[in-house]
Length: 254
Image (cartoon, rainbow, N blue to C red; front, side, top):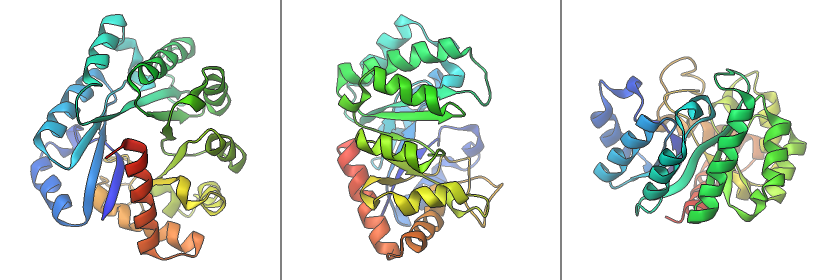
């Protein structure tokens, strides 16, 4: 059974068939799903999903593209949701310099503040970092994020940075890119990193693997990700699924 560590089933892409799809996933090899908040509305909808479905857990946090919504009152609200019995992480939080929807200093401020939230509540963090490799690592080191647990979502940087994150105790989230012909850098990271540091994730509805690239993603497609990892690491598909599931259970405490 596969543990899906990062999906957005609150997204409007699933409005037409959300219930049917989630029931299908539960019956076809997906053991647990962490639905990850990105906006204030996304967090609200994540809570609804984890309260409705026994196999869905939640992460509460605000994506760097959406941090303009935040103030201290909203942080207090997020803090209150961290005590929900099915909230397993603060996320996704971090930096995104690709879209540049929010000022970099504003992104940094709320990244640090949401890391503080994780420290206050004892939850792990789910870190989003796009085109912001140096600043993300520098901030995490400065804020002693090695005292936290977490995952670098949709890992896209070098082997050298992967080593730094693993030395801090962080997992690497591996998704559909590992199946792409142009995913050479991620394939090298997967080859280098021990299986004990890898998690399976989709970022559904985004980043679908081959042969579904460009279409709506869903957790059922994690079989392609796990198979690609198995081929790269020269181990069985079953071993990849088993170890990544154990990793996720250990990180999220479920």
